[in-house]
Image (tube, rainbow, N blue to C red; front, top):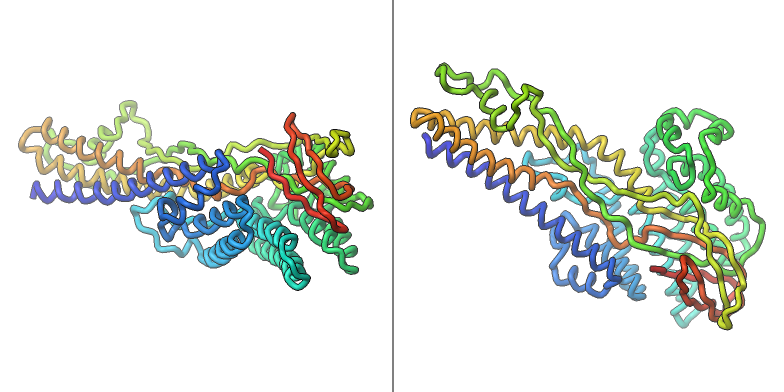
Amino acid sequence: MKQAYFNRILILSFLILFVSCAARKVRDEGDLISSLYSKNDYKSVVEKINKGEVYKRDEDRFLKQAELGIAFFNLKDYDNALIHLNNAKEIANDLYKISISNKVESLFIGEATDIYYPNQFEQANIRFYEILAHYMKSKEVDSDNKRRFHQQAMVSTLRDWSAYIENFKAQNRGRAVYKGSTFIDLMGIVVHDTYGRAKDRSIVNNFKMIGKKDLVQQMGLYPSFNSSHKKYQEDYKKLHLVSQDELSKYITETQTYKRTQDFFNSKKSFNTYLIIMNGHVIKKTAKVYDFPLGLPVGVYISNNEGMDDFVSFSLKMLALTRGAEPKIYFELPKIDSKDISTPKKINIKNSKGEELDSGELILMANTSEVLSSSLKNDVALLEAKVGARLAAKHIALLTSAYQTYRSLYNNGSLIAYLSASAAYAAGNRAIQESELADLRSWYGIYDHIYMYPLNLAPGEYELQIDGKGYKFTREKGAKQIVPLIIK
């Protein structure tokens, strides 16, 4: 009987420890990929993934394809970038159809080892990089048919992006979560203005009109655009009932908001759009939460006056000395994003070093800010779920430890207590490791994406920003997109 109790707690601890090792390995893989991006070592990202050193699990299949896509994009291998980005998009679409509430979840599986479900903004970002990859391919190909194929693919991808956003809006009415942004509106203007067909002018004007609405309806959630974002978030559930004029009262415009608004209102024509990508997304970190542990008072009450009942035993295990409600602790993820409420200033110089243009960048996307906002909503839903799951693990472990304590009590209370506490301590450590916060992200996406419209003749130029210079080429052609990665 005594051996059976020992075996039970050993098996329980082993199961939890097995998952805890997996959780730690998942976190280590993410740290490795993130460090490679910080060094701009995109070739190693591809090598590590293709060798199966990271993202080998089926649960990480989205991350595998998404990271390969962005790594190849940075290596200027646009064919492979498009293949893997499309794979990531298809996986994301399949995962989106799975209702998280209907998943069969094991008692011992934590969020960090579960399937990685891409955030809505991550899914939108796939389309952005696909569009840029198609544009770069349109510049590389040597036939008009291939060029038109990639130009049309840019438009088709933009439509797909728009359809995805509209579908997500319909399913999340009233929730203060990402439902699109001026990102797609700005990209829509760039794509159609550079395509240059007769009908594109009216499409550009339509994107500008929608963009002005989205500034109020979507960007009010974010501090980069709205100094009153907290009030906007608090009242979000009722804001869909108010008029556009009433909604605008919730907006305290930042300089970033005004810069974007001025562009949407502008009737000026441009022949060059700089798309500036800066820094990879901020890593998630872990925040510790506590959760009350409801002990089943009526379980295992002993008739032996010297023997602790289950609750007394459990309180000793939890090291509670003040009679407070017992609590357990666990991690959940967060992102410490920074707002960009003031636009960055740039200068453009020609090959002779002469200044040709200067102005403020238009913020297309502050990725970490959007992900942080969405994550806060997800964490609010996860807190009770994870806490309840963790409580169940602790109750199961305490029950097994108490069985050990009871079985050994006749050999001496001290021996019984020490044996049980040692078993519980080992299991408790395994539980903590198994409930590591899920810090996985699509690490390769750029954190800050800006746009700067201007008029340039073909030639060599230099962008100056934050005291650094970045050379670029404006090629021949009526209208051009110039993607530029800055460090």
